[in-house]
Structure formats: C-alpha cells, structure tokens
Image (tube, rainbow, N blue to C red; front, top):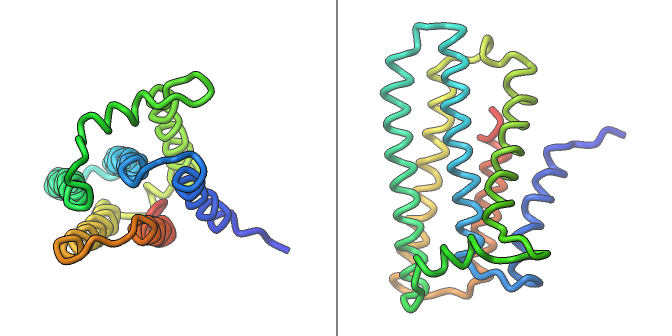
Length: 196
C-alpha cells in the first residue's frame, strides 16, 4: 500500500489551525497571520524558482521582472484585503496590537514569532529543494509556467477574500465558518498550486 505524502501533509497543515482555534484559544486573526506568513514565504520561494530557471535559461528575464512585479502587487493586495476583512468582521480589534500579541505569544516559554517564522521558512525551503531543485524542475518548466500558476493562485485567493469581505458587509458569520473556508481554500491551494 502506497502512502500519499501530499494528503498526509494537507491533513497536518489543516490540523494546526483547528487545534489552535479549539484548544489553544487562537482567534481568527492569529490563524490568518499564520497563513499570511506561509503565503509570503511562498512568494519568496517563487522568486527563488524564477532565479534558478533564469540561471538555467536566461531568456526569461523580462517575464520574471514583469510577472514578479505583478505578483508582489497582488501579494500586497491580498494582505491589505485580508486585514480589511478581519477589521470588518471584528471592528473592535486593534490589528497592530493583535499582531504584536501573535508575535509575542509564548508557548513553552518561547515567543512564537522567533520560532514560527524561521520554522515556516525552513519548511518552505526544504519543500523547494525536494520538489524543485532535486528533480531539476528548473530545466523542465518555463519561467512563464511558474508565474502563470502562481498568479492564478493569487487571483483565486484575492477572489476568495473579496467574497468573504462582501459577505461580511451583509452578515457576520460565526468564526468557525470563516475558519472552515480558510482551511478549505489553503488545502486546495496546496493541492493544486503549491510545489508545482
């Protein structure tokens, strides 16, 4: 019997926010920050992929510059729209204070910001090595293909957050509904876009 490691990884990635929400008293914003950190690391790794492809095939410089700039713009839009949506759901929340609380949240006596960010970066880089460098994907995929998949993921996420914001203007749903949507979307993202 063959074990599908991607499905096990998806289950593990979904388990962390569920445990955080129900057992560690993480709020919705804590979980959003956690996912945004992973999203930012994904952006950085896509640029690393583009750099590696450029090192193998120098013809993609213009594509990298143009689509990379578009990608960074969409990343900023996602971050801003996420914060606007959280503020719409919880207008009483001081987002800057909550961001500091997230960073300084202690688990086993260690502030999680100093542990979590390097951990997300190390896991992301290991994934990059195993799924992109080792199989030499830089010689098999084009610069355009890397950015096309990445930009589609940005657009899908932007659409999802826009939908949540639109719904939140009409009615504020229970946090479990937002949490379910976030977990579903990130699982679909990892299944269809991440690691390609």
